[in-house]
Figure (cartoon, rainbow, N blue to C red):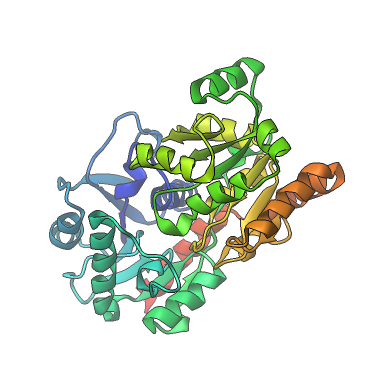
Length: 383
């Protein structure tokens, strides 16, 4: 088979979310498949990218020079796909090129369908760029008849995709995301700890929240919960927040609404992988109060770092957490505050959650994801 993969996000300098999924998929396909030929379509190539330097001979990177994503996917990609005589194309990020030949087998990974939800169920994006992205994803699905197989990342998402798109369940396959072993048994020196704390202005023990600008991340609710903690806990623990990319100063000003300041609540901005590992490792608790997710990789990363997880009871999150963390109603501040206080005051409960969290990781494997994905390539090709 000649298989094409939209690998644009896997080659970003700041790999997160869809990019991490695509990167791990490619890396593990390279481990298990020497029989098929892969073409990875990207818009930029960074020579220092590990995957760029370590791919086997049956993987080829092809640069499609187009910075506008809509033009990249809908104008340029179809031309390359036709020229390269592909048998199967895997669109890895919710949308797919429409103007392709009918004999091409199309596989699309739909990570979630938040963009199809009503405003009263999931708060919707506010920025122009976010609204444009939502419209593009919705419009793209008008051509769903061209899709031969949908891959999604959880049982919850499988039924959510079916309900929102009416794509037949038999065409939707689940490949759970994996867990990166680098977070397990991560060793950090005292010097590195001091360096990390100095960089981010961390002076005390802290709770960690990996949030974001999107309203579904519920970052403001995490701040509100922190503001309602007993004063002796707020004095002892800071709140560290990563994932905020825009309007950082507005977020800092917002702290005043909750009687807080940016000494107790720290916004780090973007962090590197090493800094992320440091934050997971050193945090006393990891707070994940999202209103909607397709999966929730940060949950697994925190568990692997042996940091107790307090997570939302919404969408896929209970499926991912299993019995490896504390599940709460994210919009009930009293419930979340009580969960934090109870875990902090009981060493037995604290250790129990850590141990169950580590055990929970056995359910998630990037290698298994690659094997299941390769199986889907073969199935659609043989039909």
